[in-house]
Image (tube, rainbow, N blue to C red; front, top):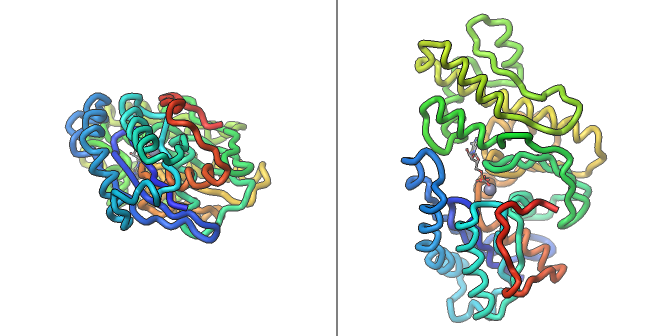
Length: 349
Ligand code: KG4
Ligand code: ZN
């Protein structure tokens, strides 16, 4: 089954073609037009600018995805079995561009439409390739907009057992990077600086820090709370106060980055390990843009058996949307193009 995936929820215009089958989900093309360079100068995504860029990019990106998958435009209607599109959560003006494009293609090609939740898409990045997931599954979903622990009983069956009470993990990285004058997006910039820290970022950093009076120590918010929730806004504030007190902080940016990154990682791992002990699951997965963080990937894999998505499918892309679309298409979970709607606050249900 051939699925065209379309993703425009934030600042990446993306389209992909996958071939879904029982033995493998094969990515035939995965095209992403990133707007990072444009938004960088504003220090974050400007919704109106993002929408305008999506409008300019969406058709060229869809065309390129078809071409790279070896599908001629005139044969697309015949070859594509379903179109999967992100309907939320995300920026409303960005989402509309992808959804309207999917609607037009669906009505002209007469190909069924599948509505996909962006978070569900991140989860389904783990389904690309050969089947590895067994249900029930536990997923740590960490992105710029969301941080949650999800129990998945089967395809499309989710229960959120914990989530952030304020900032998402990726958002925390982005805000910390801003405080440290590093730019946008923060996650990759902080992790690159952290790798240069003279104090190696390791799980025992918090303890080592307490033994070395010169070390920077940041809190691990909610690490001992008796639930699966997270909170990262206090961590960012703690960093702000530390920087204000330290006149020479600019000379210690790698150490600040390493400690900040480790604080986030410690909490994410601790809550995931707790949930994995409390719930009987057969698979644990990592999902979302922050899953690109090498230290998180390394340290969490040391603690538990966990699936991590291929790096190219961690941050926003359309292959993950097509992958989720394939499983919904199998169940004929289609929506007529006249009825599809965007929902910027769509919940995972
Ligand atoms: O999933 P994603 O591409 O978009 C959303 O759905 O939000 O995630 C983007 C987030 C950003 O906050 C970015 O800073 C973070 O993922 N991120 C990282 C890394 N790469 C991206 N955070 C930590 N380490 C990284 N290497
Ligand atoms: Zn995302």
